[in-house]
Length: 263
Image 1 (cartoon, rainbow, N blue to C red):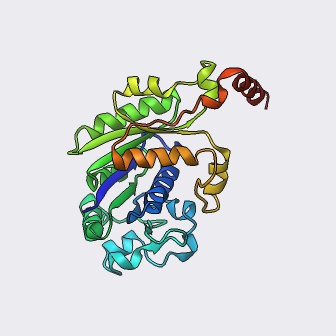
Image 2 (cartoon, helix red, strand yellow):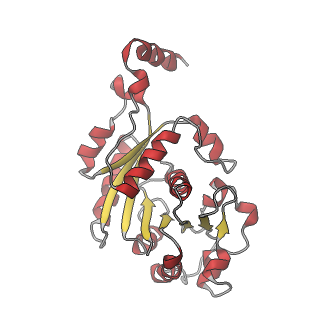
């Protein structure tokens, strides 16, 4: 039976699709069977981040409307054999896509995977509720900005109305240099504001932004270790947190901070 986890956020642009893709890849690399499910219908881009957009034959709407079986819509990752993507549709306006219908797809795949990660639309409209309805756990992605924290707080409040086993947050795009200089919220401050367990932190990484546009994953980039820790925390229940300020502390760290500010 798979762990069904929705990855959501209060606002768009916080990197939840990137988190979904890289977390799934890390889990699959450990040997787990992982399905990444895109339910952001009409504004989907998980297929692009995963580099499979040209290989998509069917999508989740085709499954719901009976044009194919769930397994036929899955696209296997060419890098990691145990990683699959259930793509979403680029445009669709019918009311056939309900939370119940999507849940039927999730349950049809349940026995074939260890993890089903559900990439949720931003905001708290109908698409959000369809995605959350299918899940038993939730990860809320938040960036160290007041607006993102406020939106995440609203999302967590709404999630409390669902029968979820566990809720946690991932702080994404955090900069250790700005945290140490007091110009950015720290992960601890965000945790205190949201009163929700911290699953992990991912540092700001220009390589991730570039890779996401060409179907690349974190790999050996500076955020690679952070994603590995995030994966371990999720699966093993550990509470290790990537030290995003380490390279900016001490004499040489202070030099790096000043240099980064000038750049």
